[in-house]
Length: 142
Figure 1 (cartoon, helix red, strand yellow):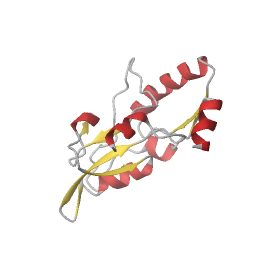
Figure 2: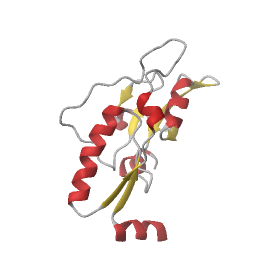
Figure 3: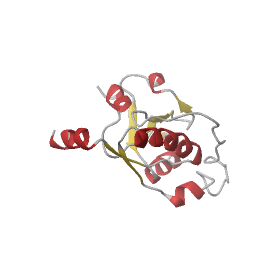
Figure 4: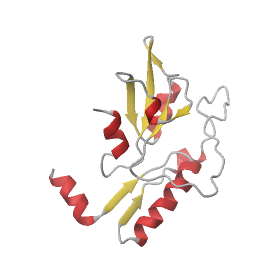
């Protein structure tokens, strides 16, 4: 509760984006927050932004993304991948599903598991916002 109040008082956000596409979309949103008087801090993971593949041996280009021309990614959002690694809407995650909630390199590590642990499929929920719990994650985790 103290941390929540502190964040509200300072209006500050710490975020990290795993792909160049998400970085561009998130950075646009971050600049709007700065214009509104908020403080933002980007944790840049150059290693992730320079990676091309989830599976290095297969050279799958799983981390290659198209540059988004005008889209935003609000800090309240999460990025969800189904057990096959396909990006989906958070509303498409079935209730009571197994999920890994992570950010940065943890997302790549989870995707490298192939969406299955001991026969149990799981979803990967990426949370770029590090300074608070994103609202969309709160809605996914009742």
